[in-house]
Amino acid sequence: MSADRSRILDLLAGGKITAEEAERLLDALDTHAGAATAASGSAIKGDPEPLIAALPKYLYVKVLAANGDNVDVKIPIVLVRSGLKLTSLIPPLAMDKINDTMAEHGMSVDFNNFKPEDIDELIAGLRETEVNVDAKNGDTVRVYCA
Amino acid sequence: MNVPPLVLDLRVVRPERRPVRLWLPLFLLWPLALVLGVVALLFTIVADAVLFVLGRRYHHYTVLLVRSFATLGETRGMVIRFSNGKTAVDMTVQ
Image (tube, rainbow over all chains, first blue to last red; front, side, top):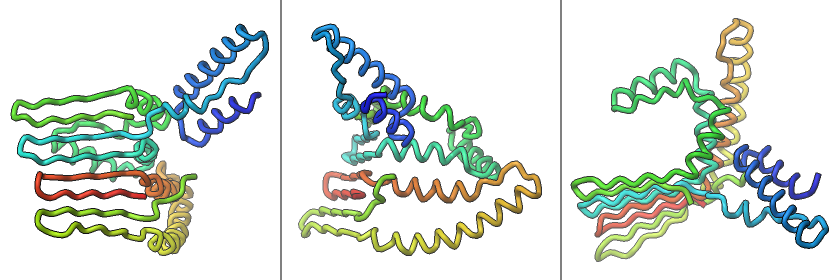
């Protein structure tokens, strides 16, 4: 196994990247190595660093209210991942209370359905998601990863 | 494992007043949290063992405690900014 592959797998094992991102990096590494081999006739190792650096690291939430109030929040993706993984460990009784309270406030998300294996997929999806809300009163909300 | 947050940088800008900047040394809280964590860990290990022996489905308080500390450690890099045109508050976990 090449050092680059090993490094990508280490990042995956350390929870720094998701399984999907690891797959994309490995694919990119193969493509890069394949192109280099085709061009030069020799196997040149691809450098995954630029690809890893290009992955979004933060989740941004920007709220611009019409009355001039602005809120910017920058959350590390690793914190989002860690927080989501934590939800799968919350005791069932406490989780039921959380679900009930959230439902009372109009957010009917059942965290009992959060499974650790789904979290990586969710994070991968989150990295490619952008939410833009423009309210009638002029308030705007943007949620994106970068 | 990431380095836990060491400093909370808090900046407050108000009109016609001097800006305030505070560096709150979070690294001073970590040793205390570590001591409390170890004490709590002893309780959770005992609780989990008892729950396991009793055949309860949920016996993960120890993992929950450890993961909670890990989650706190991942807050490094978080930035919260608030401004209302007059006052601006900027909080950075470093």
